[in-house]
Image (cartoon, rainbow, N blue to C red; front, side):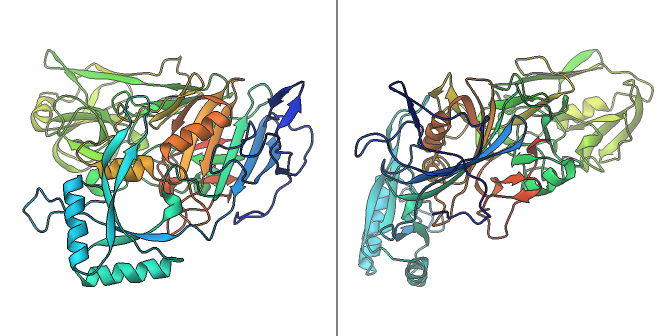
Length: 545
């Protein structure tokens, strides 16, 4: 039975093939013809057949349908399990910190045990039975297993969301803050589903199209993955990397990490966070950690540039330099700040560069200064670039005059030659390295020791996910997994790594997920967005055309 909100497609056998005493699964990109069938385990009772998704109990039904979208490109859709009435809705409390005397201090889903126990006592006194539960972090590449804190949930569970919502309302009347939560979204639990997984595989041996990425007309205007797919005539597309959504964090749509499109660098990396490197011919797809080096020669001194095509002073996801606060290391979903920066711009940013106090110098195609402005914000003509400066670095730009030719150097090292056919899309953390699970949660800023609620919600709980990688045959693999719905559970990050490995990937990274997760095929959305408003406008997309 399919739980997808889309029309059925021609099917291909999903059951594992047993040959000469070994188990192998049919290559996704080379279906000789279309078949259909539900997966049935060839292993003993309680054992999982090789090739099945490592989600839920081993006896879950799994159905795969595969079709060729064009030579060298296939779409495989996997349905595993089914929603179970035994999975309940629960009520989870926001826990005030007991160490903070401020009664208005913000609560969090995960706090220290003392704070959790104190809330349990307050709830009991108000007539609500609850319990504090440890939240456990599994071991990953750079984080040890352990308890990161405690959550508090009411002991009474509910058959539906309406019952949980009613309990949340009663708690609110009593002065508590809480949310309704479907227990199937707890990562690692052995629920029976349901999971919807979409896999696009591009085989460079047969592919004669164009694999790349696009941010649409300009960086600061967000568009949905479906819109980006239609505008490029893409056969298939998935959402791309992280981007700025809040104007207080920078320009909306600006990649929050490295961005290279058709060989042109439009955004600098976040520290050394990973990215997926794609070539137009679908060959040599790789997961790398790009580096960025940029500087300008001013008044007999060389001054480093801090970024490109972003609002000066705002560094989304951090990972800049030592002058940034609160950190120079990657820190996901956090905006670092710096009062003294130089940032370069080109026309791909948008109709106008960011406005504000500071200095802006406009250069022509040859690198000659054509304008020096005592405030920021201008329109760039084709072939022009500009440098914006704020604070001390901004004052250095004022020494330039029309006609000067400051030497500007910008370079991104992606670990491979960069050509006009190169696309680089940001992401993180790594999921697989050399075919083994290798989640770089701490290195890439997805571990926040002072805010375990972030780790709990972003890493450990199930969310919609988008994954990109390459398999042992050099095929590019793009994956989306629906989530945040009772019939679409999503994945925790450890589950995402396990799924990527089960699909045969050798190297893989996590791309933007949550409400951003989307896949379009021939201009039609085939995933189920988790945002109430529907498909979310994103910063960029990976396209197959």
